[in-house]
Image (tube, rainbow, N blue to C red; front, side, top):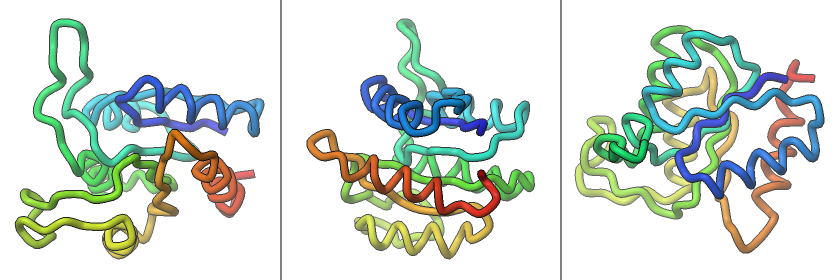
Amino acid sequence: MRLLLVEDEGPKSEKITSCLVDVFPGIDINLARSVRSALKKLDLVQYDLVVLDMSLPTFDISEDEHGGRPQGFGGVEVMRDMVNYEMITPVIVVTAYEYFSVDSDEDLAHGKESTLIELKCELGDEFPEIFIELIKYDTFTDEWQTQLVESIMAIEGLF
């Protein structure tokens, strides 16, 4: 299985990678750390699955750069481009946030906060072709790992 992990935080990406390698020993994981690098990799390689953070910088962050304006819904931008360019690859969103401030997305109410449940419904409505699951990442429990593995195992045709 070839997987694209889109995550800008090092410790979180390491935990997700470790979980996946332990359960799926032959997995091939590529890492993207921003919206732009994710879109570039998706354009070049056919992936079986995308594990996507919701809050991402526009560009990769280096020692000399800050990565551009942070996007609370950078993951939505990635999914919109995937659908627009007919990259129909399953997406599982893994986020550490419980609420998302909505103040720039035209499709959602200005100044509103979305809960994870609301966001999951909105993602399912907007991206029925690719959205699989929204998982709350938590450094204090392993529940997210169980949910991630079960979500991957449930994807028809992946194995």
